[in-house]
Amino acid sequence: MITLSCSCGSAGTTRRHPMRGLSADERATLIRDAFSVSGGFLALEVDASWHPGSVEPTESCVVLADLDSLDASAGLDAEGAKAIRDLLEIGHVRGQSLPAPVEVGSVRFRVAPADEFGPAMSYLVTEGTETLLEATVPVPHADLLPALVAVHRERGVDGLTSLDVLAARFGLATALARLDSGRAAVA
Image (cartoon, rainbow, N blue to C red; front, side):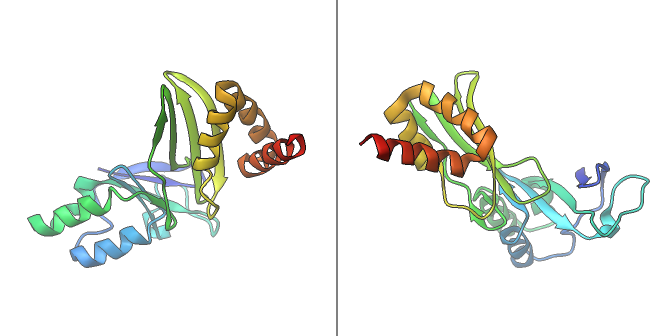
């Protein structure tokens, strides 16, 4: 089953397949241009004919079809299916690569597609089950993961939780810049 969701709030599932009848090369092109790809899952923007639910779509509706690697490779020969599954392991949001997760001791830094209809990435820093920082950043943007790791190395867990408070108020990029300017003023 393919999950359909719309920015208007409508959601549903379907057995229809947005990639049916396409070759592996054509599917690969769609995946490279997709709304987002992460961990074997694909969010593909589709036209209004895919709109879920009983309400009619408006001009502002953004409809996404969420497929897993099995759905995305359905109907292909073994070689084509493997190529598609491999491509779905290369994460991105609107073409901007997702950095690989980083672990520093018990602290884990991860970037994933944000749960919203605008292209954005979610930065998440956890220690065990505790969330130290969670922020959404619109795409495109510079990779902020190295700066987050640097904050942890210089200021520890307390620095990350303080940064989380700033990020909620100003956005993550601005919060990191303020932290850097504060550090420069002290030096």
